Image (cartoon, rainbow, N blue to C red; front, side, top):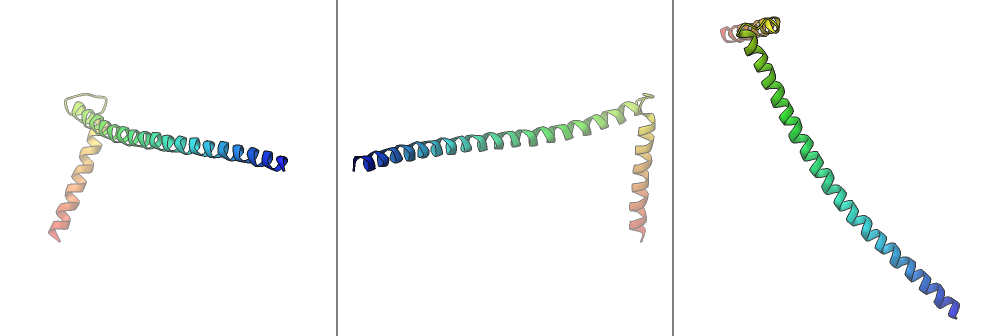
Length: 96
């Protein structure tokens, strides 16, 4: 009978240890999810910031070329031609 009691005690101890490990893993999972959410938020905000900076850079390039810079003159001409085509298209749509 004492063997059965020992086996039951051993099983109880193992179950307690397993439950403790489960609790630790759940806490770790919650922490990791929070870190993932924080990282995702950071990535989104940095992506938005990067897009804004790209637009600002393009605007500065165009402005610089309009001020007489030879480096981006071709790009500016292409952009102006594109805008003129869009305006012509809109005018044609309004005329119909």
